[in-house]
Image 1 (tube, rainbow, N blue to C red):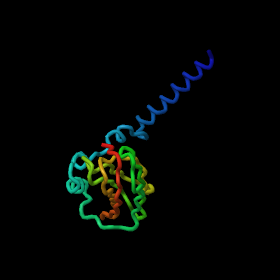
Image 2 (cartoon, one colour):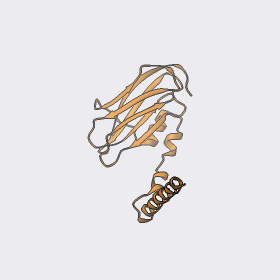
Image 3 (cartoon, rainbow, N blue to C red):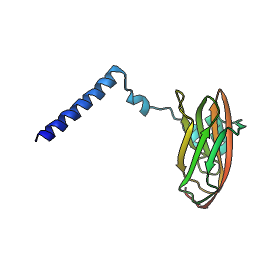
Image 4 (cartoon, rainbow, N blue to C red):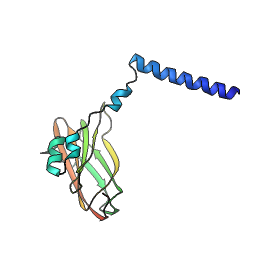
Length: 154
């Protein structure tokens, strides 16, 4: 019986601490839930439109942006990729799959000096080129890899 009471008091204490943190402005859960979302870019069905709406059109090729992905994917529903930017001041990385029904599959922002690294699993409708685009210092950089898909994932 004492263990139940002790657990109840601990949970109440934690809930009070979180509520106090939110009230004091130290915790801002609504900001995390209201993150900006570029609906036009994610809804675009053509690669050129997706790049235009995402603000990545006109990017220059860079050897400092590394895209690691398998060359052959047996199952397009599970394609793992890693993107690492060695470009100083990288603020975001976007990933496009050219022949997907919706080419923009990710757009991740990095703040306060976070390491610009992205690991993700995506779906591919068919064999296609994958583009990684990084934004840094007001400029955009890209790199590409071609992936052959045996079984469609979309």
